[in-house]
Amino acid sequence: MVITPTLASEKLKPDELFAERQKVLESADTEEKRRFGDWLDTHQSFLATHPSDELLEKDYRDKISFKAGVHELRKQMLEDTARRLPHVFEEIRKQLKECENEDKKLRERQKYNDPGELKLIVSQVTR
Image 1 (tube, helix red, strand yellow):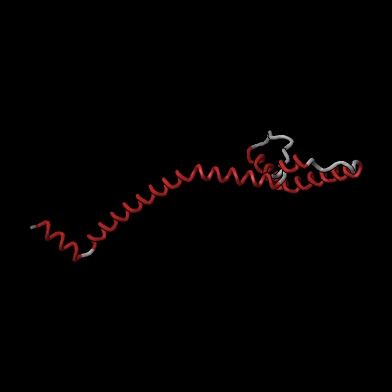
Image 2: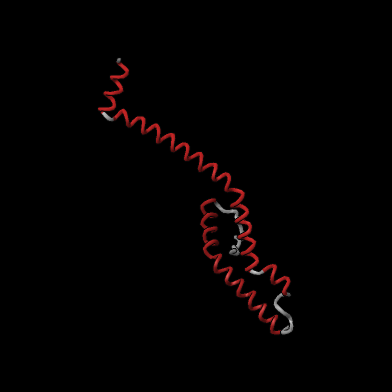
């Protein structure tokens, strides 16, 4: 997640506002790194003055760790995928049926492009 700095004022013309927002977005990564660096510095000074304090208690560290976040994201993605799959399969079957019908029509039309086949059909109809 990137921390995006906000504009001092958004009372600008649309073109100017867009350009200013683009500048803000371009500087967001640098801003985040600067803020994170400041936070690390503050945290390091806290640890220097309070060496017996741990970073986080184990229970909290396990709940908010990157590993826990990745696990939760994957769980959510799998649940979402499982929920959507029936609809996706239904849509694929529908599109397949449409393609098969279109193929059948084109093959029927192709028969009439063959002069020999066309002669045969016309002779059967005129009898």
